[in-house]
Amino acid sequence: MSREELLRVLGAFEAAGLEYVLVGATAMAFHGVVRATEDVDLFVRATPENIGRLRAALRNAYDDDPNIDAITADDLLGDYPAVRYYPPSGDLFLDILTRLGEVASFDSITMEYKEVEGIRVRVATPAALYRLKRNTVRPLDRQDAEMLRQRFHLGETEGSE
Amino acid sequence: MTRQARVQRFRSVEEMSRAPVLTPADGSFERFVQLCARLRALAPDEYPRGVFKFRTLEEAQAARRDRHQSSR
Image 1 (cartoon, rainbow over the protein chains, first blue to last red):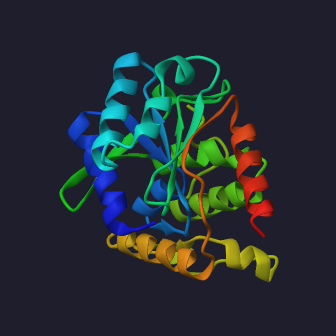
Image 2: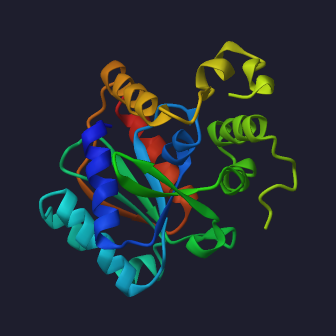
């Protein structure tokens, strides 16, 4: 993942007015819990208008990559709430989610703003990240949850809003 | 970094090597992108291109796992 590419994507999100929230390792990094990753995970608000903003932002960041046309509101609001986009750079990929079963959606994730290089970034709070990660099956996620719990002194009931 | 976070305990070396590094939040973005770049340099991987759709997170994770296994 190149620094410039990530900043370009985050800047495009802000410029498009995208309603999103970063989760996963990229979000953890903004809270000082740092591990390497290949992807950028984000929830987006599930409305046709917002999916339009997502497509506009990605087209802006990736020079009108025609593959972006395959990211549709019909899918993200319908049977396919998880879309993985591999941009032409070949250096990272984006996991775009509108909901996670009954567990999470854009509206259920508390967020805060962080700033990097003048770009306002919407990041899930440590408690929200902990809640997303603590009950998943991947060992890596459980380990992330434990690091968040230690770092932010989160209890078992934390983030269970 | 808090005083309590200065010592991290692990049950195995594998667990330790997977663990995130706790750093002060200021400057952690730079450390993050450096770590990601190092990962790409040490374990280069050729990604496909385009858009892939999944009904569940489990499907998405399985696809990722399968791709990793097939690229080994």
